[in-house]
Length: 133
Image 1 (cartoon, rainbow, N blue to C red):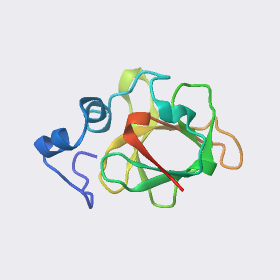
Image 2 (tube, rainbow, N blue to C red):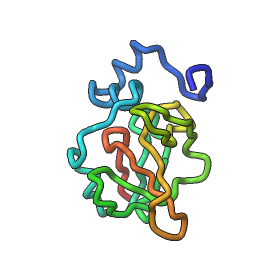
Image 3 (cartoon, rainbow, N blue to C red):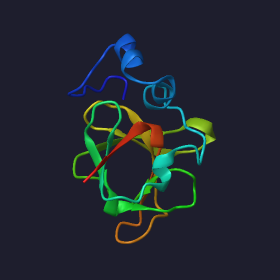
Image 4 (cartoon, rainbow, N blue to C red):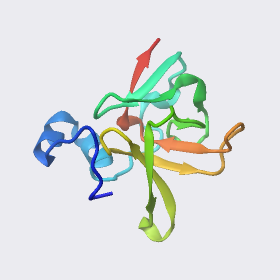
C-alpha cells in the first residue's frame, strides 16, 4: 500500500498535526488501540461512523454489532468506503482494512461475523468519528 495513491493525501507532518498521537499511531502507523478503551464500542444511536482522518462515511449504525472483542465491530461497510491489503505481521496472515479515500489503517476483517455477510470488521474506535442522524 506504500505506493498506492488516495484522493486525500498529506505529508507526515500534516498527518501528525491533524491527528491525535493515538490516532496517528493507529491510522498512519498501523497500531492497535487497547481493547475496551473506546466509548464508540458502546455507541447505540442511529448514525454514521466516519473516518477520523478524512471524514469519509465508512459504516452505518445498523451494521454495527457487539462482537465481545472490545472493538467496534460491523458486518458490512458502505459501498466503496474500504480498501484492503494482506497483513502478515505477528506471524499470521490477516486482511487489513483501510479508508479508500485517505488510506488510513482502520483495523481488520475476519470471517466470523453474523449474517447476512458472515464478516466481522474489527475497527479501532480512535479511527472513527460518529455522526448521529
